[in-house]
Amino acid sequence: MDTADVRERAGDLPREPGVYQFQAGDTTLYVGKAIDLRDRVRSYTDPRSARIRGMVDRADAIDFAVTDTETQALLLEANLIKRLQPRFNVRLTDDKSYPLVQLTDHALPRIEITRDPDEGATAYGPYTNKGHVETVVKALRETYGLRGCSDHKYRNRDRPCLDYEMGICSAPCTGEIDEADYAADVTAAERFFEGETGVLADPIRRSMEAAAENENFERAANLRDKLNSVEAFHGEGEEAVASQSDERSTDVLAATVEGDTARVARLHSERGQLVDRSRHRLDAPEMDAAVDDHEGDGATDAGGDTAVAGDPPDSPATVLSAFLTQYYAERELPETILLAERPADPDVIDWLEAEGVDVRVPGAGREAKLVDLALKNAQRRSGRDDEVAALADRLGIARPDRIEGFDVSHAQGSDVVGSNVRFEDGSPAKADYRRKKLSERNDDYANMRELVRWRASRAVEGRDDRSDPDLLLIDGGEGQLGAAQDALAEVGWDVPVIALAKDEELVITPGGPRNWPDDSEALHLLQRVRDEAHRFAVQYHQTVRDEVSTVLDEVPGVGPETRKRLLRRFGSVENVREASTEDLTDVDGVGAKTAETLQARL
Image (cartoon, rainbow, N blue to C red; front, side, top):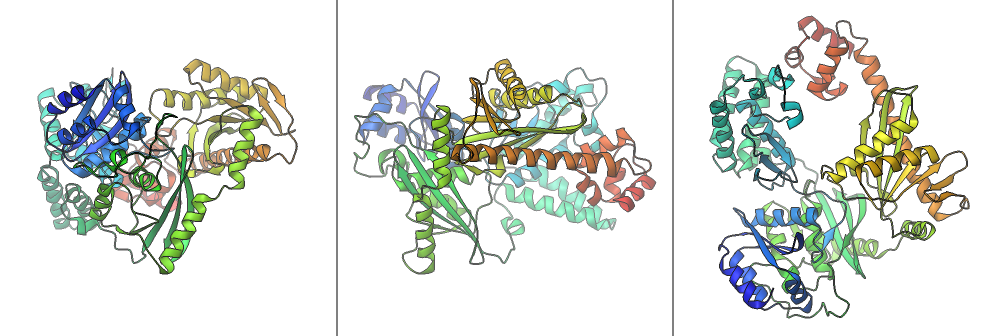
C-alpha cells in the first residue's frame, strides 16, 4: 500500500477505540490497537521506522474491529496476536488468550466461552477474569435455558439430554420450547452482554430472597456469590468479589533480548518470600536484514501504540508490553508488579492500574535487588537451554523449544488413558499438560494412534489453545512410533516425531534407531520428557481405576448408568463427595436413600 491508499482507508474508519490489522492477502502482518482508529491508521502515512515502512508496503488491505473501551481493545489485540501470530508483532510463545463469549450463527444459537469465535457468531469480550465469565454463562443458562451443546449432539435427538434434566437448557432440539420463545431468551442474553445487568441479576436476586425466606441458607449463599459475580461483570459491585486475602502477592519481571528471541524472567513472592520462578520465550517481529529497526524518534501517537512508532521492536520495554498482556490472559493478576523498566506501551500500565495492580519500577532497596535477580535470570543461558540446542544438532532439526511427550497406561485393556505433557526450553510446562480417556482395548499401537490423532485433530481444527510443538516424543519403540506417524499423516499435522524405547534407551527416528551415549545432554532431555509423560499417564490411570471403578461401584444403589450421570453432573468423585443431598438427588436415579449412602461411603 502506498501513502494515498493508507490515507484513503483511514478516512473510512470510525473515530472510536478498536483494533486494526494490516493484511497481505489472507496473512495478517501486524495487529495494533487504537483509542481513535482513524487517527491511528492515518499515522502510517508517515511511518517512523524503515521496518514499518516495509510492513506497509507489503500490505494490501486494512481490517478493523470497534470495541467499547480502550481496555477491550488492549485485550483483543493480545488475543489476535496470540491466534494469528503476525510476523511484525512481538509474540509470547505458548500462552493463552483472553476468553470471549459467543452466541453462534444458528437459528437456535448456542452460547459458549471461546478464544476463537465461529464465523458469523456474535462475540462479546474479551474478558480478563475467566472465573467470572464461567459463572455468568452458567447463570444465563440456568435462567434462560440457552443450549451449550455441539452441533453433533444437537442434531437428530429424540429426547432431551442431561442438560435439560439439570435445568440449564430448555431443549429446543426436541421442541420443548418453540423458536420464538427461545429467540426471546437469546435476546435477553444479548441485552445482558450489552450492559443491561438487571436482565440476569434481578431473577437471581429474587431466587436468593426466596431461598432465604424458606431458610435454605446454603442455596441463598450460593446465589449471593453468583449475584456478586454477575454485578461485577459490568463493573458494578467489585468490592463484593474482591480478594480479601491478607497475603500480598508480587510478580517481578525483567526482559532481555538476544537476536530474534527475547526472554522474560518472572519471580513470584508471597508475603515477601520467593515461592516461584519461571522464564518465558518471546519471538521478535520479522525484520529485513537491510532494515535499521532502531530508526525513529520514539514519539507516541494518539493511539498510544509505541510498539510500532516508538521503542524498537527488540527493546526490553516493548517485550514487557507484549508479555504483560499476553501472559496474564488467563492468570490471576498479582497485587504488585515490579518491573526492570516501564513498558513501552502506556496503555498496559493504565490497564493494570485500573485492575487494581500496583505497578512500580524500583530504584533502590530490596525491591530493586529482586528486579536485579530477575534480570540475571532473564540473561542466564542455562544448561537446559544447551540441552535443547544439543538435541536439535543430534536430530538435525530446528531448535525444539516446545516438546510434547505422549504415553498410554492401562490394566490389560481396561481403564485406558493417555497423557500429553509439554516441555518448554527444557522445563515442564505443567499448565499445558493434557490427559484423555481412550477406548477400552489391549492394543498399545492402536491406543497410541488414537491419542496422537486426538492431539493432532485438535491442533488442525484450532480447538487446542496451545501453540504447535516443535517435536513430539512417543514413549515406546518402532511400533508406537509407526502408530503415531499414521495418526499424523491421517490428520495432516506436520510435526517431527520420534520415540524413546525404555529397555535400551534407543532413540527411534523415522530414519532408524540411534544409540546415543549415556552422558548425552540430548538423551537426558528426552528421558525427562518420556519419564514425565509416563508418570502423568500412570497417575491418571490410578485415579480412573481407583476412584471410578472402585469407590462409586461399591456404593449400594449406584450402577454403571447412575455412576456416569454422577460424574457427568459433578465432574469428579471428589465433587460427588462434596455435593449436598439436594444436589445429589437432582441427578436422575439418585433418591434420598442413595444420596445418604453416597455421603456415608464417600
